[in-house]
Amino acid sequence: MKSKFKVIVCSNSAIDYLEYDKQIDIFRSMIHFGDESYNDFIYLDAKTFYERIKKEPDNIPKTSYVAPGYMLNTFDKLYKEGFTDVLVIVIAKPLSGLHDAIVQLSKETKLKVHVYDSKTLAYPESYMAMTAQKMFNLGANLKEVLGVLDYIRDHHKMYFAVDTLLYLVKNGRLSKLSGTLGSILKIKPVLTLSKEGKVETLEKIRTSKKALERIVDLYLEDTKDKDVITFISHAHHDDGVKLISDMVHRVYPNREIVTSYLTPVVGAHCGPKAISIGYIIKQ
Image (cartoon, rainbow, N blue to C red; front, side):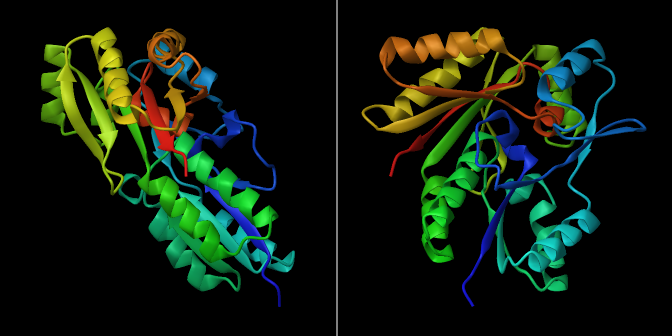
């Protein structure tokens, strides 16, 4: 029997804000404001979300990954539709329990479930899903697809600047002590993701503008004389997008930059005006 593949990606990828092959399905996380719960993008898009948290700074949202029952029903439905395999591309394992939840669910369905830890989020995760779908459309097998995804995973980098430490602290990404000190000192940390997908603090900077300039400097140092895909992911920070784009284009006038939102379920952890610049080295 010939294999028939479905690609699914989690909404942490923010694929909704890009042009993508609609054959790709999305497992959407939930955003919770107290007793109010919203399906990521469907009932709460990025612009609306960031405007709300700006107006309600004391109402810190929480998040949860897609309900296990929904995922299991999706797998069973796909099997009945004739799919033999599903490739689920998920946010970095250290940032969510989604990976392990799907591994457990895979034991309860006849569909062959392949869970891929992207070890990242936002645009690189979307790019993996879009690449996988394109390759399956062209007749590639799973081993070939996973080989390319491994390349993307191992040859990309993101640098983040956050405007406030509050959301990282409240959602457990930084200790309360670090957050308190940061608030007092008005620190704007420069962050990245480790090779395992953990949030790491690279530097602590005193102003937002200098933090933005620093993440561009790091990006430029990494990409000198390299052929890369460049992307900016942001929490409704148009001024930051312009500043970063202008800095990049002063050095590389013809370098194309893909710009997209950080989806609400990611924004709930990094807060308003967070922004990242990153790259994928072309294969």
